[in-house]
Length: 76
Image (cartoon, rainbow, N blue to C red; front, top):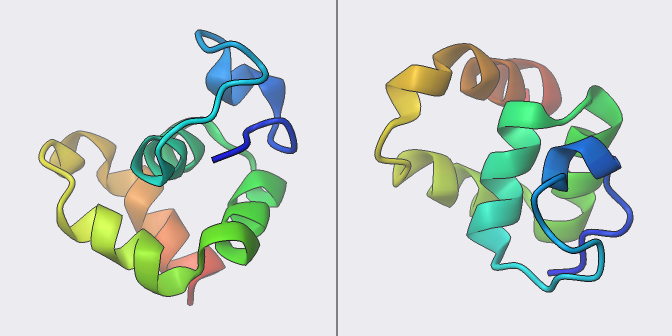
């Protein structure tokens, strides 16, 4: 998945022209993204795919606040 449209700080450890798996992009945006990045994420991958990644996120309790914000405010 192309990451150039998202805020650069989200993917600081990746090459700006990387083609990452959607799961990686979804997690990075939820944890480090701004609201505009989350809205862009929904447009690019869709709500269903985001919910799938959240459901299968192994250490999601560590990011409960971020995930809850995504589910309640952005996907609401």
